[in-house]
Image: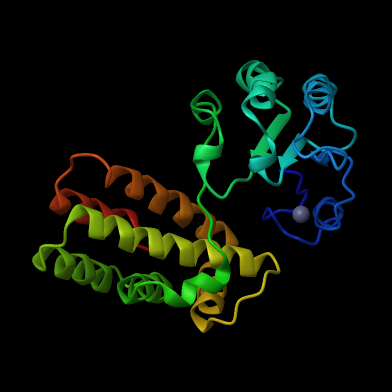
Length: 232
Ligand SMILES: [Zn+2]
């Protein structure tokens, strides 16, 4: 959001460097070391600060590193600014489980599931194969892959898990492309072959299909649409 480079997040422009060193004036980590939970006064000051224009960046970003420290009363203080706050304000709520946040907060958020890059080594072999196909970029191989899944009468839930694992790999590759660590050669291959922009589009696309797997849609319909959507 603050990157000034051509291919955000570039990780090397002055804005990215400030964010990564935790010294960007418009990227604010909300902490309250004096209390167990983040105090109401701290959240009230976040709420009024959000209306002040950014110092130098495009956006003003409030990062909550652990929503376990954000009790329901505190969350309610933020409700209005989340709903109708100024367009320059962005709020990132990090939580081990989205259930830590009130439904009223969650309904105003876009949920983005992350897993540590180290977990990717355990990802399902079909997900790895899918990622390899994304790297080689042959539409016919991709079509054969999804035809095989359909012929094996894969259930929607299994397809959802496969796509989640594939998206975890894509997100881990994105993290590697931003300077994160990852010893898995597949991650490196994804970064080198696809680049950050394509990886981020793929993460979104896979996220859409993961959601669709939660609806009552035929697996054949999903695999057909995936073949088209993931084609190079
Ligand atoms: Zn940048």
